[in-house]
Image 1 (cartoon, rainbow, N blue to C red):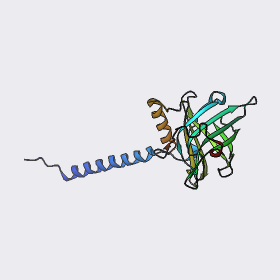
Image 2 (cartoon, rainbow, N blue to C red):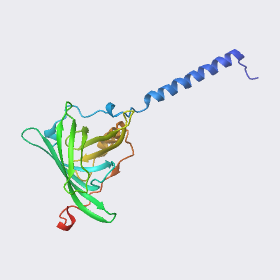
Image 3 (cartoon, rainbow, N blue to C red):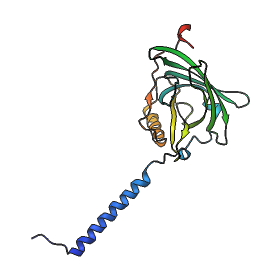
Image 4 (cartoon, rainbow, N blue to C red):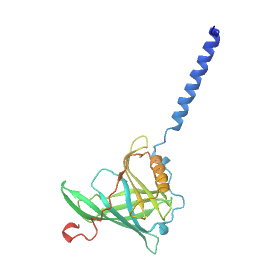
Length: 214
């Protein structure tokens, strides 16, 4: 014969199960990612001099507007006064069928945080976007990879309504697997997991004729 629990004992077990389910639900709520921009971490003690040099864009989370689309190569430099600036070249498609190589220029203003800048940027060609955005270096090891983030517009709850982010590599052939894992973690921390597209490097802007360069 099957043993029977007293009704009171059964009710007590049910209450205990419901209590566990409630605790689990509360735990899941606490585990949700904080997507307020103010909560995002950036690189500690960022060193502009070590960051200078050539970086190849490997992946990009796109903002609104017309920016460089692929074959993106950025060159960061720091002058004798510690002022950082950058130039970037890449392919842009105009009118859905006209591919050109274009240049963008950026200058950076320091803030109290060494990894957070205000970046004034503009396209050498007038059709490209221009602006003055936040530019954060979320993470980098200086020699292999870098993750950049910018929020152009905040929602009322402090999350970002219009952001962009780059994953850069020193090597145009890409990032090693262990670094890719680190980068994916940073993308998740920015609440941008699975929102990046891969950037092609097929030499399109290498040695292009003048008619294809703006």
